[in-house]
Amino acid sequence: MTAGVLRMSVGALLVVVLACAPQPSPTRASFTVDGMTCDSCSSAITAALLEVDGVASASADHEAGTAEAVITSSELSAQRLAAEIESLGFTVTGTGTEPADG
Image 1 (cartoon, one colour):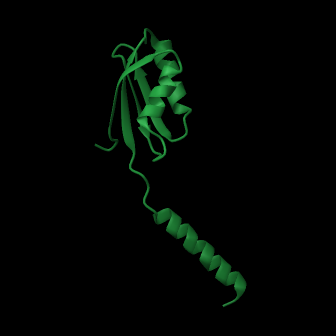
Image 2: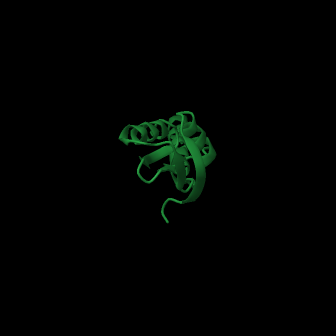
Image 3: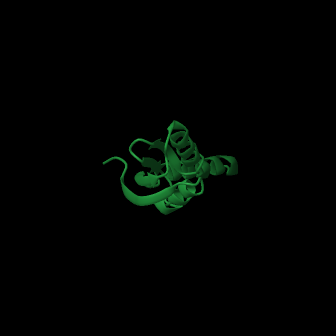
């Protein structure tokens, strides 16, 4: 086997190993949010959450006073997202998590 073929084989093996490595299970984080009064508030929270690396989707509902995000990074916590919401001037009064596929 030549060095070039060996390098290609090792590279291909690395790609297969990385592709087969277990991925973190998505988590749905939910928040009770005080201070949202209109669609602009909901949009601001949704946009801020979507800008955080590791958030796959997000939504906020000012009428219900809730927000949620699907977290795909094991390094990201619901508490970090709650802090992001609070940095916009809202108050997070409740936080919960559950598997996103459940």
